[in-house]
Image (cartoon, rainbow, N blue to C red; front, side, top):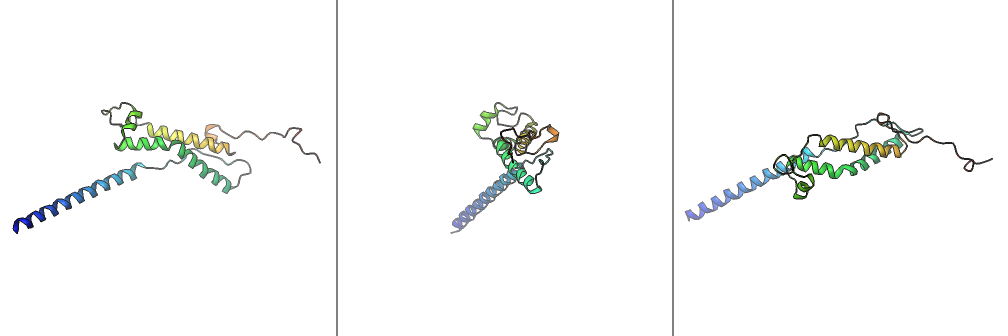
Length: 155
């Protein structure tokens, strides 16, 4: 009877240790995931187009942020996985040989800056296509031209 209690106590202790270890591991993964996932925001100045209301400009900005985010989402996720060391074999193959034994670690610390630059460029292109201007990049919508003779409406 004493051996049985000792066995049950031992199994209970092992089960609790396993549960605690699993919870700690899950908590670490969640913390790493929360730390590496940072949404990109535009770092360039955008000016509203002529005659645009604040709310129209605000809607353009929101739409272009979503569009730029989609444009760089895969690259950002791949970089986040590589930084945390949770790279998949496909990610390692795409990233190529690394400086840390082929485990998909980043070869350069400039990768986040490159992703931010691509995000900014995609955002700027979208905003210009909606009639806004980007003075820092020298981008502005095409000037409004005079209507041709055929387009003019005569009274």
